[in-house]
Length: 437
Ligand SMILES: [Zn+2]
Image (cartoon, rainbow, N blue to C red; front, top):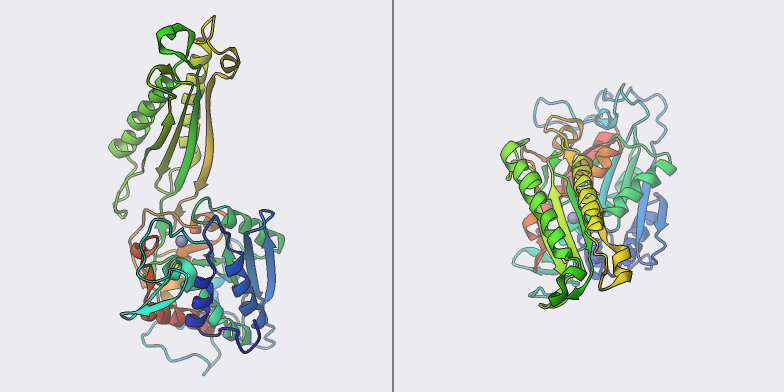
């Protein structure tokens, strides 16, 4: 991009980001290139981490704290420097972005988002999903709400972040592969550590219509695999039926884990579904109607209230799998139809992804900071997972706040409204004012 063609407004940057298809199959590097160009031009310290897969990258743009000799202590605005406040509440200051005595080295604020999108396959769009299209007062395109809009706003305001006095560092970070595994966010945590960046507060810009969402469930996916012995069904004793053992596990999971979540809690009525949920959602098994099945693969998920440790659930499932594994090995026939398969008999459990829950409160430091900058306060908690739980787990106070509506996030004709982008611009502008005070 030449200087003349480099986008500068939120909308122009969003257009460029939308034009780069960044589904998990394509990778997000095209979109990262756009963001890197704009953020580098603002004067940020850029740290880019290309993944060995050749298609994905994380990017971290840092605006370190500026030296402000003789300036007032953080949190006490110099006389006459504070913008007039509409209410009696004190103007938001950089004190919002200090963890305080508990962890004095944790300072600064991070605007974080993912630059991957869900695919458009099988969806019927009114206009090209990779061309930002304004229609009926809305901006349509894949990723406009989830969540290129937020990063476009952050990038558009980057020159103002760079020019501002900053009592604390400001970080803009974009990741890959949120939509499937959350790996990009997990890598980001390591990369921040490597760079010795320890922000106190993180705003994750998933679409919330600019509400400050303090909490969400964890989102966890696992695969159980059962290996039996194929045999002609007329010679039943020489085979071992994998589906039978899979069924035992599926029954256990639904009855003793999932039903137990519902019947015995814990409960939190701030969630639309006030208890942990889950289920077996995909089963692949069997060879033919007259063949003892050699294999069954069972994919399951659970979404747990954030204070329930997903690992505890995994441990319970593993215990059951170990029992079934022993049961299957004990049932290997003396004269198996397939001696090679007989050596592989058993059951295994693999964790595909554990996406931590977010366990903040509307009065916690991250939600308080977001509301002070103009986000809407809400007691509401959501059932979808985000990277915010990963950042909270890493020690930051995190809240989900971004432009657009989650209802549009993954479907056809995804859009964000210009009003939502403007609200987000006002939010980031307020943040820039606050870090200087
Ligand atoms: Zn998202």
